[in-house]
Length: 198
Image (cartoon, rainbow, N blue to C red; front, side):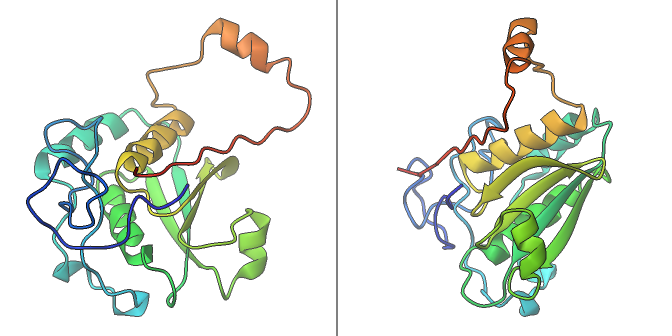
């Protein structure tokens, strides 16, 4: 998926998700299912200078508790392979903070950082050719779910939904009819979803 927007600061217009000075909360504190306002704080792009203490939390206490409740039903550990690079990635630091805040909410989410430049073979193994890129594993098995770009704005809830779905915590299982239709698929298929903030 494409990044929702470049890293930026804040202003007083929370209603426009394309505004590059939108607030930096990843989810709307009044509605978890409508995360229109994660665009990203002003952050240094050099991942080696990362210090979690200098950044304001993206998730409010209320949002953190909502997510804890959602993650409480997880039965499988989800490993997120986070493909990043130090130079030339505007949203890698933002992505790292988002993922770090998720891991603080449950021990069922594990993030493994992979250097896209230094570990090209591993990146190729998962079909990742740009940073930031995410590959989701459940119980150590590849789910074939990939996300390209920062999981910001509406993409944040897409990431959360994917985590819930592959961890056994989703409350929206496929219908019997859907499962029967999927059983008729005999060849590997790739589904790509392209997202733009506009």
